[in-house]
Image (cartoon, rainbow, N blue to C red; front, side, top):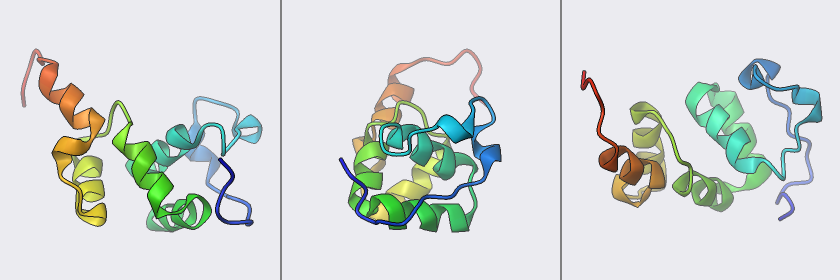
Length: 102
């Protein structure tokens, strides 16, 4: 799926500390890129992915994400006006018992 915008996506390399960011394919690994920005990025990074992928693709990818922290999940649910229960990470989180619940 091509990006809706013809601009180049420029994100801080620190978001991708575990890989070589110069070899990252932003279109093929969209869910990974969007997830990193949602959990660790700045507001400018969030705006950059919205401009590059478009709001619908960001929502579609995040609905299928396996893990999001609680703050990121709440932000996405509020921003897109979608119940948390529709996110895959919320369903997985509820079905996985934790050893310690802080």
